[in-house]
Amino acid sequence: MLTDEIKKSIKQLKQLDVLESAVQDAEKKAKNDSDYATLVTDFTTSMSKLYIANKTLNYELSDETLQFTEETIEKLESVISAGAVDKEELSAAKQHVNRKVTPNLSKEWKTFHQKKTSGISGKLATIGSLVQDQDRIVQIKTNISNGSDWDGLFLADVGTYTRLDLLKSSIDEVDEIEESLNLSDEIRDFVVLVTGGKAKISDLNENIIKWIKDEKLDEKFIVDFKK
Figure: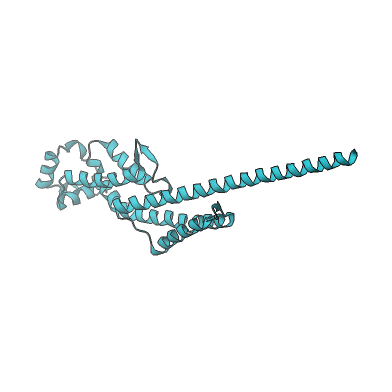
């Protein structure tokens, strides 16, 4: 009968609606779970950077950013409700991380990096030209420069070493180079004059000439006319 066919069709349509709704709910749940997992992973990575930077370079967060990170942990814990991801809580946690935590981490690290490496860059400007292996100096400068970006600190540019690893090792390496050159205050002042293009013949003395010869740096220094 016609009525039976109509009832059958309506029943099938309802079943399709139920099935479609279940599929959509499953897709939404999968997306929420994925978004939450990504957020937790990214935040955990940031905390790992903080731990290593603090341990190797004595990096510390401001009180404000530290509070933001503590609030993030609380927000991430509140995302899971009744064994499932609460979409609204997830959205709130994302906004907190994107608007407060991440920008502050990037800004504070850049400021810290500038202060931490300004003296090192000054040393390189002074002693860099005295090193025989200039490729080594170029690599040190690259490692220091690459270490300024918070997001990229865990990237591995050379083998298994991260940019954070290379930043720390390069800072130490500059100090080692300086120590190996045996620079007295007198010699350092002379090298600074040379680097700045202000050295004169009258600035040379027996101690400086002896140091140049002892360190086999004769080819590093030339005499030129002032232009």
